[in-house]
Amino acid sequence: MDLYGELEWRGLLYDATEGLRDELSRDALTVYAGFDPTAASLHVGHMLPILALARFQRFGHSPIAVVGGGTGLIGDPSFKAAERTLLTIEQVEANVAGIRKQLARFLDFESSTARARLVNNAEWLIKLGAIEFMRDVGKHFTVNAMMAKESVKRRVEGAEGISYTEFSYPLLQSYDFLVLYDRFKCTLQVGGSDQWGNITAGMDLIRRVRGGKAHGLVFPLLMTTAGTKFGKTEAGSVWLDAQLTSPYEFYQFWFNVDDRDAVKYLKFFTFLPQERIGALEAAVKEEPERRAAQRELAREVTRIVHGDAAVADAESAAHALFSGDIAAMSVAQLLEVFSKVPSRTVSYAPDGWRLVGLLTESGVTASNSEATKLIRGGGIYVNDRRITDEKERLNPAQAIEGQLFVVRKGKKEYFLIRIAGRV
Image (tube, rainbow, N blue to C red; front, top):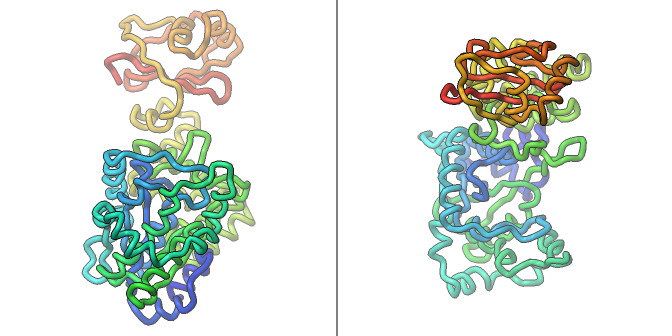
């Protein structure tokens, strides 16, 4: 299967310019995708274009990842309901540094044949003067054509309208494409379907200024089958940075996807071959309760982003947690698994603590009377041990590694109690 066919089979080909398939089969192209540095980390929604660049590289094409240190100061208006908050130069530079490290996990920047490149468009956009920009770029676009683009039209017709700053964004991105065409012979830009208008604007600029031909290819925008935005959870975005979304949480995000989305995501976010994904698709239909597709999805994507050790740790922690063997988990595992639950630190007490007072002091219960009532009713677990005696005392030796208690109130409410100076 050729690259174009591979993208079609995976459902990644939403639209593309005429003749691209022949170009890809005939020549080794240079292809780019842009990443706006609106945060210090990329999230799972960015994985579609990142992995697309990696797929192109595997087929012998040279990828360029453009970090938008320049355009990030403006903000892309495409299908946004309101104007973004402008970031400072310092914020953008810090975000660019974080993103640069993450992209290196996916792309081979050392290859001698189809070597990947990482560039920051601030290099040329910051130096671009207003008069130069209007003469050399702006004169090639009509306001009529820009107003006709769906992404701009929605904003113009909305209550807030669109600022000149964001209105100029497609021209800046077009200039990016022209610079990459001149410097690296880049003739293909890829991105989400919301970028089609920006991509075609760049193609037009290359044709008008250089008489050259360039191409565009866009992927479908991601929504879950349930109609929610992909990559969002109750806790917020699912980040690629392990400090923002722990590998355990990352693994669980993929493991818990809907049966209706599992096979689609295997095609989108892994390099598994057609035969293997076909077998997993059959498993979803025959034995959905075994979650074989979700398990392999979680393993593959976590391995790509965080490595094999993170997969092993996530699965070990999940097994211990769901088998009720919390006491067998390490403090490091517990802090990762329960990174989002309420946590309180209490002073070390050699003789221990009366449980009722400890629960109240730690914010697990609002009062000693509530703590007593819950204990008598069997609603309090410490390190997965149910406690029914309100006179129970805990001592430091009972804490996991002498540092930590995991308290569960009822069926699902977890709390961490740390011992000062120990964690």
